[in-house]
Amino acid sequence: MTSQQPETTHADVVEEHGHGHSVAAWAGVCTAFAGFFVLCLAVVFTTLVWGIVGGVLVVAAPVVGYVLSKAGHGVKNTAGRPAGAGRPHH
Image (tube, rainbow, N blue to C red):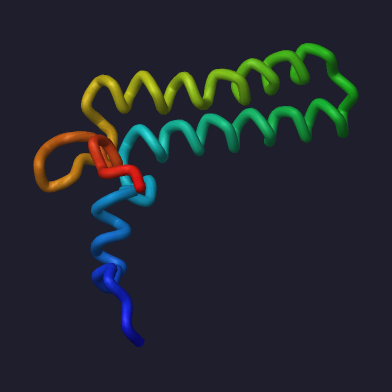
C-alpha cells in the first residue's frame, strides 16, 4: 500500500476528535436522554406539561454541553486546546 499520507491510528483519532470523553459531553447526552425519557412518558400518559418539560430538556442539552465546554470541561488535546481546534483543513 503506497500512500503519501501517514497511517492514522486510533490514538490520533481520539486526539483529534476527543470522542466525547468529557464532563461537557456526558452532561449534554444525559440531559438529552432525560428529555427524551420525559417525552416518552408524556406520550404514554398524554400529559402536556411533561411534553413541554421534555422538549425544554432536549433543546437545552446542546446548550448545556456548549456552556460546560466553554467553562473548561470539554476534551482538550495535548497542547491544552479544545480537541479538533486548529487542525489543518485539506
